[in-house]
Each structure stands twice: as C-alpha cells, then as structure tokens.
Amino acid sequence: MKKYGNWKKEKSTDAWKEYKKRIQNAKTVISLAKGKKQKECASNLNDPNRQNEIFRIAKQMLKERQDVLGSNCLKGVSGKVIVDAKGKDSWKEYMEKLVNEENEWDHRLSSRVKEGAADCIRIDEVAAALNKMKRHKAPGLSELVAEMIQATGDIGTQWILDLCNGI
Image (cartoon, rainbow, N blue to C red):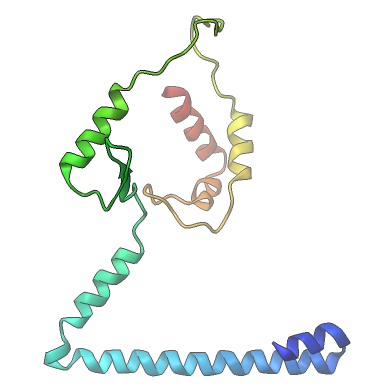
C-alpha cells in the first residue's frame, strides 16, 4: 500500500514501476501458494484415510454456489421472532396468520377499470430493456445471462417480446 501511496503523491514513472513491480511480486507469491495448496490437496486424495475429503470439498463448493431462497426466521403467532424455524408447525401458523389476516381500508379509494386487452409490449421497449441489462453478472436459476440474450440480436428480442406478450 505504501508504494501505491508514493506513486499517487509523486506521479512519477519510477514510483509507478516500483508499484507495478510490487504487484507482480505479490501475484507471483499468491500463485505459488495456490499451486502448492493444490498439489497438497491432490496428494491427500491418494491417502485412503482422507478420500472422503473430496466429497466434503465438493459438497461445500456446491453449497456455496446455491442461490439463497427464503429466510430462516419468521414471526410467530405471539409476535416473537423465531430463528431457524424449520418445523412445519411454525410455518403453518405463520402462513395461516398471513393469509387470513384482515386489513382495514376506507372505501374512498377508487380507480378506473380498464376493460379489454392489456397494452402489448413494443419491440423497442424490449430492446431498450436488453440494452440496460448489466453484463458479466452471475446467472440465476434459469442459467441465462444477459450476454446470451443480447448475442441473439433481433431474433432474441422478438422471442422475448413474444414471450412477454403471450403471458
């Protein structure tokens, strides 16, 4: 960090070269350490006492890559927060309260009812939305990324349009 600060203050070529040299040195050290650890792990796999470790590592990797779906806590009937509510009874009580709760409202609110078909989405709206999508993001449950859809060009835009208007 000190070399970066020096370079930022001085704005000289020598300070920049020293900073880049330190970065390259750090990358080399990290690369060597990673390689050493990988060789160590690979040699451990041949040991009969540590063969189950590969399954543990694979399970951990799979768990880290899963999407987070839902939460582990909810409010009970008494109003207290229940942490790690895994029992069916807790969820059943929570959902019954949530679904059967009556909300008060005044009847003064009104809106115009629109009759007929909903407005169709236009192709320029779909194209604008596709262009706004951020690139280099991890895929979700559909395993589609923005680059895949954008790479299809007009065909993909038309496909998305037909899909959205068909719903």
